[in-house]
Image (cartoon, rainbow, N blue to C red):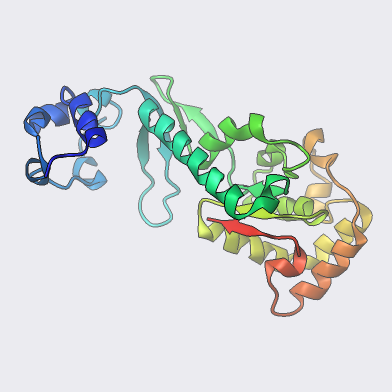
Length: 263
């Protein structure tokens, strides 16, 4: 079986990197040739000093960033991200959202909260290449496309360093109005979000009643004005929080308009 053209082009583009040379990418013409390549894992080169930092080891493309994994299931890793991957993933996102809006037309004008669990931390290595989480990477690129009237949580949420307080602030801002879509890269973020709402309902309700955060740690913290000026009162939402979270509740008990959860 011949290799599909896009895959063949990828192999040809990587012929001159060290991995491509070692495994003779130039000689790969069909699926049988490709099948002889060994499966390579991240751990296989974990002991090779600076393997991922020297791009010539594994790619001829430009390294645009390194994604930092959370380390929730194994030791944290730095994943090299090439310019080509970013372009391809951006096209994939465009196709994905086209189908989402086709299947859920209410979202075209609906309100979203997304990737609110991320700290927004970013650093640059010795080669001046950014190292950050994938969530932070895409959040930075989406900021210009997020209309304020549709995204009730501003990017300044990342100023809250404490993770639980950050989740709480996201819930507090989202609860004061309708919500049509909730997005997160990881299911654990959604679980944590629900846990924070349930455990802090006695603070959320007064906050919604008075137009404050309701949590002393946030009310007393010098937070960015762009964040605090979003606070509004909503007594109906306050009543809903108390009533819903006192029983076996669902997110739609809090946001009846919720159309879709994306993970």
